[in-house]
Image (cartoon, rainbow, N blue to C red; front, top):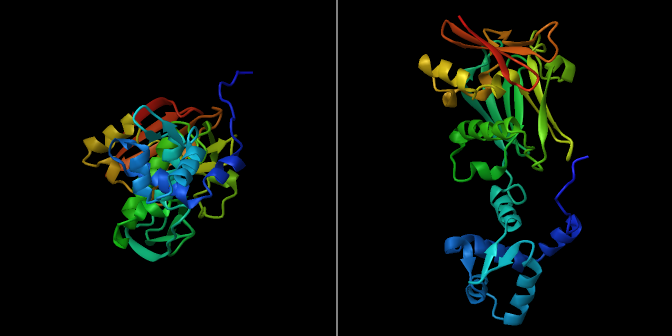
Length: 294
Protein backbone atom coordinates (compact mmCIF):
# COMPACT_ATOMS: atom_id res chain seq x y z
CA UNK A 1 0.00 0.00 0.00
CA UNK A 2 1.32 3.45 -0.91
CA UNK A 3 1.90 5.62 2.16
CA UNK A 4 -0.16 8.81 2.08
CA UNK A 5 1.47 12.10 3.03
CA UNK A 6 -1.90 13.84 3.32
CA UNK A 7 -3.39 14.48 6.75
CA UNK A 8 -7.06 15.25 7.41
CA UNK A 9 -6.51 18.01 9.99
CA UNK A 10 -10.05 19.40 10.01
CA UNK A 11 -13.41 17.65 9.79
CA UNK A 12 -15.52 18.80 6.79
CA UNK A 13 -18.34 19.78 9.16
CA UNK A 14 -15.97 22.03 11.13
CA UNK A 15 -14.58 23.58 7.95
CA UNK A 16 -18.04 24.56 6.72
CA UNK A 17 -18.99 25.78 10.19
CA UNK A 18 -16.11 28.25 10.02
CA UNK A 19 -17.65 29.67 6.82
CA UNK A 20 -21.14 29.99 8.26
CA UNK A 21 -20.69 33.62 9.32
CA UNK A 22 -21.16 36.32 6.68
CA UNK A 23 -18.34 38.44 8.08
CA UNK A 24 -15.84 35.67 7.37
CA UNK A 25 -17.02 35.40 3.78
CA UNK A 26 -16.60 39.19 3.52
CA UNK A 27 -13.02 38.84 4.78
CA UNK A 28 -12.22 36.22 2.14
CA UNK A 29 -13.76 38.36 -0.59
CA UNK A 30 -11.84 41.42 0.61
CA UNK A 31 -8.53 39.54 0.48
CA UNK A 32 -9.43 38.23 -3.00
CA UNK A 33 -9.94 41.80 -4.22
CA UNK A 34 -6.77 43.33 -2.76
CA UNK A 35 -3.86 44.33 -4.97
CA UNK A 36 -1.22 41.64 -4.71
CA UNK A 37 -3.54 39.38 -2.71
CA UNK A 38 -2.26 40.63 0.65
CA UNK A 39 -3.58 43.15 3.20
CA UNK A 40 -2.85 44.42 6.70
CA UNK A 41 -5.26 43.96 9.59
CA UNK A 42 -6.41 47.59 9.31
CA UNK A 43 -6.83 47.42 5.53
CA UNK A 44 -8.94 44.29 5.85
CA UNK A 45 -11.09 45.71 8.63
CA UNK A 46 -11.72 48.88 6.61
CA UNK A 47 -12.59 46.84 3.50
CA UNK A 48 -15.10 44.76 5.46
CA UNK A 49 -16.49 47.83 7.21
CA UNK A 50 -16.36 46.59 10.80
CA UNK A 51 -15.56 49.16 13.48
CA UNK A 52 -15.18 46.74 16.39
CA UNK A 53 -11.52 45.70 16.21
CA UNK A 54 -11.91 42.89 18.76
CA UNK A 55 -14.89 41.35 17.00
CA UNK A 56 -13.13 41.58 13.64
CA UNK A 57 -10.01 39.93 15.09
CA UNK A 58 -12.21 37.07 16.38
CA UNK A 59 -13.62 36.34 12.92
CA UNK A 60 -10.24 36.69 11.23
CA UNK A 61 -8.74 34.29 13.76
CA UNK A 62 -11.33 31.65 12.86
CA UNK A 63 -10.11 31.78 9.24
CA UNK A 64 -6.38 31.96 9.91
CA UNK A 65 -4.49 28.73 9.48
CA UNK A 66 -6.99 27.06 7.14
CA UNK A 67 -8.36 29.69 4.77
CA UNK A 68 -6.03 32.61 5.49
CA UNK A 69 -2.29 32.82 6.23
CA UNK A 70 -0.60 35.34 8.52
CA UNK A 71 2.42 36.93 6.78
CA UNK A 72 5.08 39.46 7.70
CA UNK A 73 3.04 42.13 5.94
CA UNK A 74 -0.43 41.10 7.05
CA UNK A 75 -2.75 38.40 5.69
CA UNK A 76 -3.24 36.51 2.43
CA UNK A 77 -5.55 33.83 1.11
CA UNK A 78 -4.52 30.21 1.28
CA UNK A 79 -5.48 27.79 -1.47
CA UNK A 80 -8.61 26.77 0.46
CA UNK A 81 -9.67 30.41 0.73
CA UNK A 82 -9.20 30.96 -3.00
CA UNK A 83 -11.31 27.88 -3.71
CA UNK A 84 -14.11 29.21 -1.51
CA UNK A 85 -14.24 32.58 -3.26
CA UNK A 86 -13.83 30.95 -6.66
CA UNK A 87 -16.78 28.65 -5.94
CA UNK A 88 -18.92 31.62 -4.94
CA UNK A 89 -18.02 33.50 -8.11
CA UNK A 90 -18.74 30.39 -10.21
CA UNK A 91 -22.33 30.67 -9.03
CA UNK A 92 -22.91 27.06 -8.08
CA UNK A 93 -24.04 28.08 -4.57
CA UNK A 94 -25.71 31.38 -5.35
CA UNK A 95 -26.94 31.60 -8.96
CA UNK A 96 -29.50 29.88 -11.13
CA UNK A 97 -30.61 30.19 -14.74
CA UNK A 98 -33.04 28.54 -17.11
CA UNK A 99 -32.81 29.12 -20.86
CA UNK A 100 -35.47 28.20 -23.37
CA UNK A 101 -34.27 26.11 -26.34
CA UNK A 102 -31.97 27.93 -28.76
CA UNK A 103 -31.76 26.67 -32.34
CA UNK A 104 -28.20 25.73 -33.36
CA UNK A 105 -26.65 26.14 -36.79
CA UNK A 106 -25.29 22.59 -36.66
CA UNK A 107 -27.55 19.81 -37.95
CA UNK A 108 -27.97 16.58 -36.03
CA UNK A 109 -25.06 14.26 -36.99
CA UNK A 110 -27.42 11.28 -36.97
CA UNK A 111 -30.48 12.38 -38.94
CA UNK A 112 -29.66 15.89 -40.19
CA UNK A 113 -32.58 17.59 -38.39
CA UNK A 114 -32.21 20.71 -36.27
CA UNK A 115 -30.38 20.66 -32.94
CA UNK A 116 -31.46 22.80 -29.99
CA UNK A 117 -29.54 24.09 -26.96
CA UNK A 118 -31.20 24.40 -23.54
CA UNK A 119 -29.94 25.17 -20.02
CA UNK A 120 -31.73 24.11 -16.86
CA UNK A 121 -30.72 22.95 -13.38
CA UNK A 122 -27.07 23.80 -14.09
CA UNK A 123 -26.94 21.39 -17.05
CA UNK A 124 -26.68 22.02 -20.76
CA UNK A 125 -28.72 19.86 -23.10
CA UNK A 126 -28.16 19.50 -26.83
CA UNK A 127 -31.14 17.65 -28.30
CA UNK A 128 -32.28 16.72 -31.78
CA UNK A 129 -35.83 17.73 -32.61
CA UNK A 130 -36.45 14.60 -34.71
CA UNK A 131 -34.49 11.68 -33.19
CA UNK A 132 -33.30 10.58 -29.72
CA UNK A 133 -29.78 11.98 -30.26
CA UNK A 134 -28.73 14.16 -27.34
CA UNK A 135 -25.92 15.33 -25.08
CA UNK A 136 -25.95 16.61 -21.52
CA UNK A 137 -23.19 18.03 -19.33
CA UNK A 138 -22.85 20.31 -16.27
CA UNK A 139 -21.95 24.00 -16.53
CA UNK A 140 -22.00 26.31 -13.47
CA UNK A 141 -24.16 29.43 -13.93
CA UNK A 142 -21.17 31.72 -13.40
CA UNK A 143 -19.68 30.54 -16.69
CA UNK A 144 -22.45 32.44 -18.49
CA UNK A 145 -22.19 35.64 -16.42
CA UNK A 146 -22.16 38.85 -18.46
CA UNK A 147 -22.71 36.81 -21.61
CA UNK A 148 -25.67 37.34 -24.00
CA UNK A 149 -27.95 34.33 -24.31
CA UNK A 150 -27.12 33.80 -27.97
CA UNK A 151 -23.49 33.14 -26.92
CA UNK A 152 -24.43 30.45 -24.39
CA UNK A 153 -23.83 27.52 -26.81
CA UNK A 154 -20.31 28.74 -27.64
CA UNK A 155 -19.51 29.26 -23.95
CA UNK A 156 -20.85 25.80 -23.11
CA UNK A 157 -18.68 24.26 -25.85
CA UNK A 158 -15.56 25.91 -24.37
CA UNK A 159 -16.50 24.84 -20.84
CA UNK A 160 -17.02 21.25 -21.98
CA UNK A 161 -13.50 21.30 -23.42
CA UNK A 162 -12.25 22.33 -19.99
CA UNK A 163 -14.03 19.39 -18.33
CA UNK A 164 -12.64 16.96 -20.89
CA UNK A 165 -9.10 18.30 -20.48
CA UNK A 166 -9.33 17.52 -16.77
CA UNK A 167 -10.52 13.98 -17.57
CA UNK A 168 -7.72 13.47 -20.10
CA UNK A 169 -5.24 14.55 -17.44
CA UNK A 170 -6.90 12.03 -15.08
CA UNK A 171 -8.35 14.44 -12.51
CA UNK A 172 -11.93 14.28 -11.28
CA UNK A 173 -13.78 17.53 -12.01
CA UNK A 174 -15.65 17.29 -8.70
CA UNK A 175 -13.05 16.34 -6.08
CA UNK A 176 -9.60 16.36 -7.77
CA UNK A 177 -9.34 12.59 -7.28
CA UNK A 178 -7.52 10.44 -9.82
CA UNK A 179 -9.52 8.84 -12.64
CA UNK A 180 -8.58 6.37 -15.34
CA UNK A 181 -10.22 5.79 -18.76
CA UNK A 182 -12.23 2.66 -19.41
CA UNK A 183 -13.49 1.75 -22.90
CA UNK A 184 -16.99 0.41 -23.46
CA UNK A 185 -19.98 1.17 -25.69
CA UNK A 186 -23.04 3.32 -25.13
CA UNK A 187 -25.16 0.18 -25.47
CA UNK A 188 -23.29 -1.31 -22.51
CA UNK A 189 -24.01 1.84 -20.51
CA UNK A 190 -27.73 1.30 -21.16
CA UNK A 191 -28.24 4.98 -21.88
CA UNK A 192 -31.67 6.00 -23.17
CA UNK A 193 -30.16 8.74 -25.36
CA UNK A 194 -28.69 6.43 -28.01
CA UNK A 195 -30.59 6.41 -31.33
CA UNK A 196 -30.77 3.28 -33.46
CA UNK A 197 -27.35 2.31 -34.81
CA UNK A 198 -25.60 4.68 -32.39
CA UNK A 199 -25.18 2.42 -29.37
CA UNK A 200 -22.04 0.78 -30.72
CA UNK A 201 -20.23 4.11 -30.47
CA UNK A 202 -17.24 3.79 -28.13
CA UNK A 203 -17.73 5.46 -24.76
CA UNK A 204 -14.77 6.46 -22.61
CA UNK A 205 -15.79 6.27 -18.95
CA UNK A 206 -13.89 8.01 -16.16
CA UNK A 207 -15.10 6.81 -12.75
CA UNK A 208 -13.73 8.46 -9.62
CA UNK A 209 -13.07 6.07 -6.73
CA UNK A 210 -12.99 8.96 -4.27
CA UNK A 211 -16.36 10.64 -4.85
CA UNK A 212 -18.11 8.27 -7.28
CA UNK A 213 -18.58 10.85 -10.04
CA UNK A 214 -18.69 9.33 -13.54
CA UNK A 215 -17.77 11.19 -16.73
CA UNK A 216 -18.83 9.51 -19.98
CA UNK A 217 -17.78 10.83 -23.37
CA UNK A 218 -17.46 9.38 -26.84
CA UNK A 219 -14.00 8.36 -28.00
CA UNK A 220 -13.90 10.79 -30.93
CA UNK A 221 -14.49 13.72 -28.60
CA UNK A 222 -11.86 12.83 -26.00
CA UNK A 223 -9.21 12.40 -28.74
CA UNK A 224 -10.02 15.66 -30.54
CA UNK A 225 -7.08 17.53 -29.01
CA UNK A 226 -4.56 14.81 -29.84
CA UNK A 227 -1.75 16.30 -31.99
CA UNK A 228 -2.48 13.92 -34.88
CA UNK A 229 -6.16 14.92 -34.93
CA UNK A 230 -5.42 18.64 -34.56
CA UNK A 231 -2.85 18.52 -37.37
CA UNK A 232 -5.18 16.57 -39.66
CA UNK A 233 -7.93 19.16 -39.30
CA UNK A 234 -5.53 22.09 -39.61
CA UNK A 235 -4.00 20.73 -42.81
CA UNK A 236 -7.49 20.64 -44.32
CA UNK A 237 -8.51 24.13 -43.26
CA UNK A 238 -10.29 23.37 -39.97
CA UNK A 239 -9.35 24.49 -36.47
CA UNK A 240 -10.44 21.83 -33.98
CA UNK A 241 -11.22 24.61 -31.51
CA UNK A 242 -14.06 25.63 -33.81
CA UNK A 243 -15.59 22.14 -33.97
CA UNK A 244 -18.62 21.81 -31.63
CA UNK A 245 -17.94 18.79 -29.45
CA UNK A 246 -21.51 17.53 -29.71
CA UNK A 247 -21.01 17.07 -33.47
CA UNK A 248 -18.33 14.37 -33.12
CA UNK A 249 -18.68 10.61 -33.21
CA UNK A 250 -21.13 10.28 -36.11
CA UNK A 251 -20.55 10.98 -39.81
CA UNK A 252 -23.47 10.84 -42.24
CA UNK A 253 -25.53 9.02 -39.64
CA UNK A 254 -22.94 6.30 -39.01
CA UNK A 255 -21.00 5.80 -35.74
CA UNK A 256 -17.32 6.56 -36.31
CA UNK A 257 -15.75 4.64 -33.45
CA UNK A 258 -15.82 0.98 -32.51
CA UNK A 259 -14.21 -1.55 -30.23
CA UNK A 260 -11.84 -3.86 -32.10
CA UNK A 261 -12.77 -7.54 -32.07
CA UNK A 262 -10.12 -9.88 -30.74
CA UNK A 263 -7.96 -7.03 -29.42
CA UNK A 264 -8.90 -6.51 -25.79
CA UNK A 265 -9.12 -2.90 -24.76
CA UNK A 266 -8.43 -1.48 -28.24
CA UNK A 267 -10.71 0.83 -30.21
CA UNK A 268 -10.71 2.93 -33.37
CA UNK A 269 -12.01 6.45 -33.99
CA UNK A 270 -12.40 8.14 -37.39
CA UNK A 271 -12.48 11.83 -38.30
CA UNK A 272 -13.53 13.34 -41.63
CA UNK A 273 -12.86 16.70 -43.27
CA UNK A 274 -14.50 16.77 -46.68
CA UNK A 275 -13.47 13.56 -48.42
CA UNK A 276 -10.39 13.04 -46.26
CA UNK A 277 -10.40 10.70 -43.26
CA UNK A 278 -8.10 9.99 -40.34
CA UNK A 279 -8.47 6.82 -38.24
CA UNK A 280 -6.71 6.31 -34.91
CA UNK A 281 -6.35 3.01 -33.11
CA UNK A 282 -5.88 3.35 -29.35
CA UNK A 283 -5.40 1.02 -26.41
CA UNK A 284 -7.26 1.07 -23.10
CA UNK A 285 -5.12 3.98 -21.85
CA UNK A 286 -5.95 6.00 -25.02
CA UNK A 287 -2.37 5.69 -26.26
CA UNK A 288 -2.37 5.85 -30.07
CA UNK A 289 -1.15 2.54 -31.53
CA UNK A 290 -1.73 3.31 -35.20
CA UNK A 291 -2.90 6.15 -37.47
CA UNK A 292 -4.27 5.75 -41.02
CA UNK A 293 -5.19 8.45 -43.53
CA UNK A 294 -7.33 8.01 -46.60
